[in-house]
Length: 317
Image (cartoon, rainbow, N blue to C red; front, side):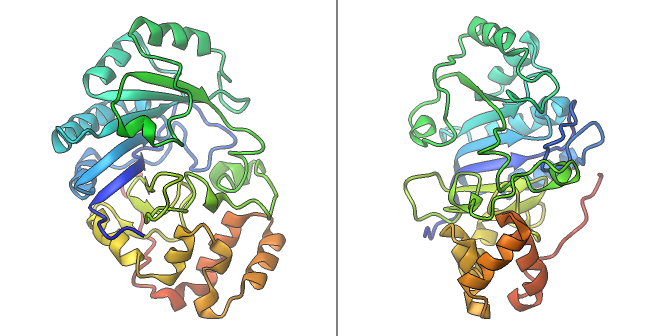
């Protein structure tokens, strides 16, 4: 495990849940009325980020739907991380991307674009892909580097302009992490108690570091500091009010989060007397590892120092 949390390899930040689409599978209820935080709060969060970050992924919702805020965030990140080699990535459904917007995003420091909408759930379901390919090609944005999210060599050694496209699949993104939000409401989630989302990128494994096969990545959902994209039932901290590095240092001492960092959620309750066998039996009942994690936090919050995990209201929703 790392000891210097003022250096983070990868940060995934959903700064808005505003979106032009309203997909059935959305795990954070994004849409035209999705939750938002203020620009002032976004600046507070940027001030509280680690001193060094190798990669920052800005996502939503649809970041371009909250364009003024996105541009101001990009300006603030460029000022904060000037000359540090931080790669800025944008995860977008691509629906709202135009020549003018693409030019502005490149000017403001975005070097990687991921079109995360090539599946049957999104409004356009990939119908704009060839148009986007031509748009990127016209600006010299390379489309050969398809998968920068997994291999950290893609963002540690230079940041040539690139883009890729992907979407939800039954085997992958409709697995553990999308037993959340509208996906629960629409009953679009994979019932597989053997699927351990914690072990993959965007899951909790390696959020505190210690492994070389995937990046050390944390997630901020609006302001909630999480070990994974779906997030634990109660956030680790509030990025508007606390230094992210301090929150991670605190979690590095917590037995529950040590096990999550190992990608082993079925053992996160051992110090409380909850055996791995009991945890797996409960997961079979719930049919999903993230739902087990929710149930565990609900059942054992008082045993885990409740002052550490406070479910605060989202402001300006």
